[in-house]
Length: 242
Ligand code: 1GP
Image 1 (cartoon, helix red, strand yellow):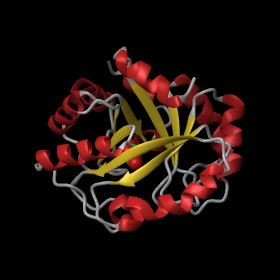
Image 2 (cartoon, rainbow, N blue to C red):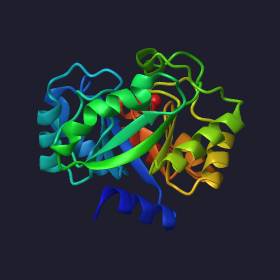
Image 3 (cartoon, helix red, strand yellow):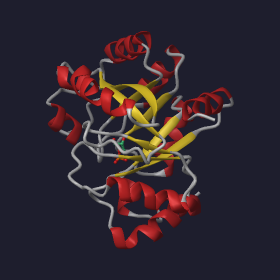
Image 4 (cartoon, protein in one colour):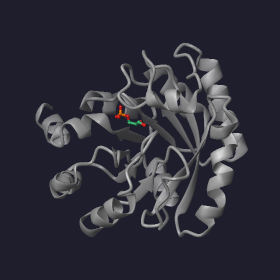
């Protein structure tokens, strides 16, 4: 079955999904076995791999190594076309709809298309919407775009709906990695209720309660990066504290 089909089936059954985001630059090779063990122990349903700026050349090796011991689908979450690996299962083919930088709206995508045609990767067209989250995040810095304001719900909704009308298969509301403030619940709710396609939410979610709030508001898939990166026992701790 395809990654997208599975996401749609999960959404239809109100079964919530969770992605652990790994930044290849921050993965410590020597501790990888333990990291994979922790991923397998966690409630994660997907592994996302990427970052705004990845300098590492270990992407292929990292994915091969994870796949040896982990059956979760591996989805690339690239900052630019250099972050493509045929060893992954799929790729979030992002367009940064909140910004007006043509490189991140269509430029990188044009460069990536011929490369992707040579791979078996499942292409997941994703309308990527950056939301203001307290201070400047890496996405903002690298893409040289401004996030949408937290209180401009109408603009966020119109942007998500435009993405859906353009043919995005997923909408991703992003506060940015390590964000001070996660995407507001009210915003998640409004967008979830007014689009048909699955909704991904991430950035600045640091505890089980934050994950639950995003789910309750209508997120279909939540992305956890920094919290797991800082503490591979993150999901054990969250379970115990309940
Ligand atoms: C960032 O949404 C992801 O692209 C995850 O963010 O690192 O804050 O969990 P965090």
